[in-house]
Image (cartoon, rainbow, N blue to C red; front, side, top):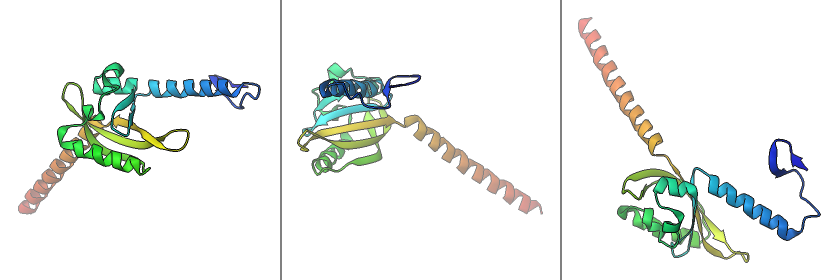
Length: 171
C-alpha cells in the first residue's frame, strides 16, 4: 500500500513481488537518493581509487564523474594533507568508521574548501571490506561565519574595555 503523497514509498513489503524485483527497486531508490544529495558521496577501493562520484561531488569539486572515477582520491586532497588519506585507508582496512571530522579538500580550480567528512567501510556480500564510502559536506561558509563572529566578539570586548577604562578615568 503506497503512503499518500509519497509516490514509490510503501508501508508494507510487497509479498507477491519477486525478491529480485524488490532488490532492483531498492537499489534504484538508493542510487536516486545518493545521486540527488547535495553532499559529496563517493566511494573508493582499498587502493584509494574512486569508484563512484555523485552529482554533489561534481558540483562541489568541479570534476565530472567520468573525470573522477578511476582516479586516486588524492585528486581532491591538498599536498599537505596526503598523509590523512593513508591514515583513513589504514583505519578503514581495520573496519573503523571515521565520523564527522573537519578537514580541507581541493577543488578542480585549485581553491580549498573546508569539509565535514564521514568515512565508512564498504563490505562485499561475504563481509569482506572492499573499499570505503565518503560523505562530505562543504562547511567553508559556516567556518568563515564562525571566524567573523569571533573577530567581532574580540572587537566588542576590546571596545567595551576601552569605554570602561575611559569611564573609570573620568570618575
